[in-house]
Amino acid sequence: MNLIFLGAPGAGKGTAANRLSELLDIPHISTGDIFRANISEGTELGKLADQYISQGCLVPDDVTIGMVKARLAEEDCAKGFILDGFPRTIPQAEALDNILAEDGRKIDRAVDIVVSEDKLVERLAYRRVCAACKLSYNLKHSNIGDCCPVCGGSLIMREDDKPKVIAARMAAYHRDTEPLIEYYRNARKLVKVNSEEVVADTFANILAALEIKGV
Ligand code: AP5
Image (tube, rainbow, N blue to C red; front, top):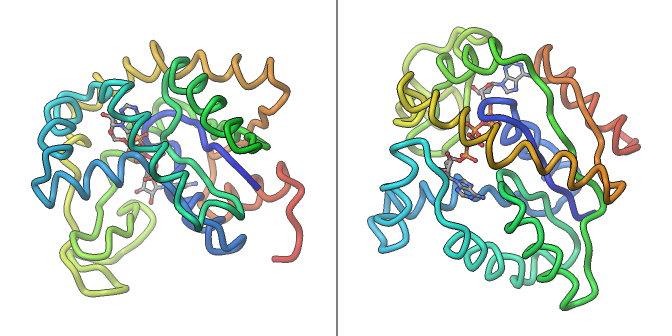
């Protein structure tokens, strides 16, 4: 299954994509995670991406499209994939269709994860990420202190989860990414999923929307 997870910052794309990737045994490709890994490693791509991410702006399309094209050409994507955070603009969506068409593939479903704006901002404020294994936690729903319960790494706040950057990310979402909902609705690939409640409920809603059984 070739899937896209759409949704505003903090909607829960990464959390749900991680779980579904394990269940379906297909790769979870998060452009945000790839950029952050490059920033941590100090690569040229990371240095470039950081200039945009730290301001809450989108990384230019040509950079992002080239990076995703290379990732989708890797062997593990042949059996399916979940794209999280890509596409984020109409030119990215059109480029993705062309990249997949080159070898006879297509997107099966675009899952729009829907949450009220108040809750999005709350989730970003309460999110902490493990500096070592990168797992993400919502401090509001878990009493875990400063260390990752899985690997013991330090839990940190993402730089772009600070209030002044969140406002810019939300503006970029409404301006550049929201039009994709119509794009995938017109292509008859859109499914909408409510994510107002806890993680388990969101995941159950996604499975139901995609008609995936067996959990
Ligand atoms: P990216 O990392 O993709 O950030 P984002 O889209 O803003 O999404 P987030 O990672 O903030 O949130 P999420 O929806 O994955 O939520 P999560 O599951 O963590 O991108 C970062 C930046 O990179 C962008 O701003 C841009 O600059 C750049 N970039 C990336 N892709 C790009 C592209 N294609 N083009 C150009 N630039 C690009 O959940 C959030 C929190 O809520 C967590 O704490 C989680 O534990 C919790 N949570 C999740 N679900 C629930 C639930 N149901 N109930 C309660 N808590 C929940």
